[in-house]
Image (cartoon, rainbow, N blue to C red; front, side, top):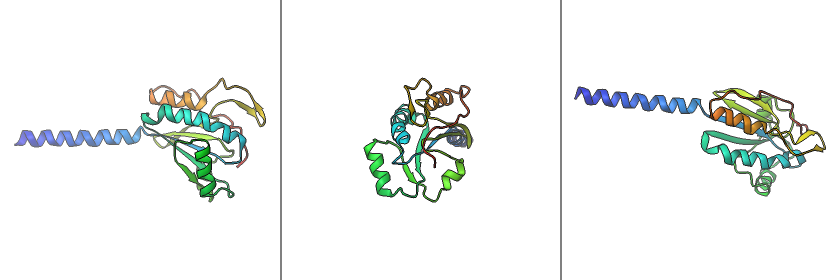
Length: 165
């Protein structure tokens, strides 16, 4: 009976540790979008691609809409039009803008273990407002790939380009 109790205790303890480790290794991606911002509209494709690539790797995505002109209906229409696959949240009170100190639409933040490990561009297809070229740096993808493979994050931050919040 003592052996059975000891085995159960070890099993229960090991389950608790693995659940705790799983919570700690959760990666969160937060992005700020606005329905009428062309750059935010364009960035929905690379965001969806990153989501499809990483959602099964313990990565959670959330899009925040902090514009006072946004409504649940306009956010839902935007989500449907651009086939956004992850939660879209109304942030009209600016709570998440303040938490992250976001400044432009399509700015992305990546957190692991409660620490922001990256903030900035999703990719570099916009070098300035109105200046588009094919992307050759995929910041969000590279950061997530490094995190899930326990490698050093290749980018910590850069200046996101987009419509001002």
